[in-house]
Image 1 (cartoon, rainbow, N blue to C red):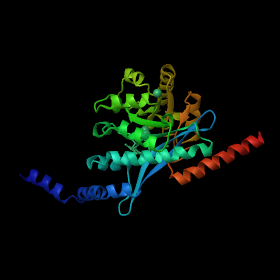
Image 2 (image 1 turned 45 degrees about the horizontal axis):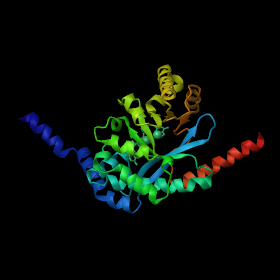
Image 3 (image 1 turned 180 degrees about the horizontal axis):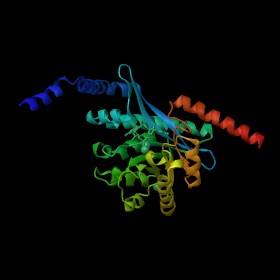
Image 4 (image 1 turned 60 degrees about the vertical axis):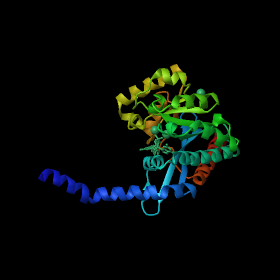
Amino acid sequence: DAKGKGRRQIREFDPGLKALADRQSLIEQDIEAAIRNGEVETWFQPQIDLQTGDIAGFEALVRWHHSRLGFVSPPEIVAAAQSLHLAESLTAHVASSVCRLLARLPDLDLSEVTVALNVSPREFALYSVADMLEQISAQHGINPARLEIEITEEAILDADGAGEQLKRLENAGYKLAVDDFGVGHSSLAYLISLKVDRLKIDRSFAKGVAESRANQDLIAALVGLGHALRLDIVVEGVETAEDAAVLEMLGCRMAQGYHFARPMPVESLIAWIARRAEKKDARRAVA
Ligand code: C2E
Ligand code: MG
Ligand code: MG
Ligand code: MG
């Protein structure tokens, strides 16, 4: 009928959809080489202790600038890698960058901080994340306590068998953080039994927190939960000084966001760390 035909034509001739399909096939065509040759990069975003202003850690975030497509987003990269059985190569690639950064931190007076990497829930079913991380950190001589694994509430629910691997990693001394906390559904019992170290409060709650009583109440409740369960709280997506001040007042210990620093390539990060240390020395000299 006419209606069905119309729909079919839209599917066949919609230039937007065609462009999307072309984009996806280019991504899939190039991703393996891009991981191998380092075109897929690992950038790092600092985390700040709100009380002291000290650097509290870093999060690794994957970046790919494709010669023809421009910026390819992390979710696109992760989806393409998973559909091509490259999930392990991608995360191993990021984990190696994390270990290389960790190896440089003692020289920067940051031997105590952690570096986090993201592992998507499905990955635990695709390969042994635990084997891979243990192998790579051993290769680089990295203390597992410096490496933090960010998982979402979905992984905590263990539909993909993440639980056993996470328990093993936790026993081996790795740190665990729950990412985007507050927007999914995870069980508090699981948080406790997995000995999660940190909750990263989803950035939707930080956005405009200085002006939102509802978000302030919610953050205060999560800070209370953190105290009760002995978990550190990190707030993501802090974009303004006002929001940072309110979060500190609410008892948040750590924050991450554009107000402090954007994700950066490793050499820019090292320069950023050095500048920050200089400023701190200058402040001390004045005081
Ligand atoms: P995420 O783990 O929650 O990472 C935080 C995201 O918030 C990053 O986006 C970061 O650039 C962004 N962000 C940081 N500060 C601010 C801020 O002040 N305002 C706003 N609006 N955004 C901020 P990005 O890098 O685009 O990554 C998106 C998501 O992709 C990540 O969310 C994570 O779930 C996933 N991802 C990134 N890298 C990897 C990776 O290596 N492996 C896996 N499996 N997933 C990754
Ligand atoms: Mg994350
Ligand atoms: Mg997040
Ligand atoms: Mg622990």
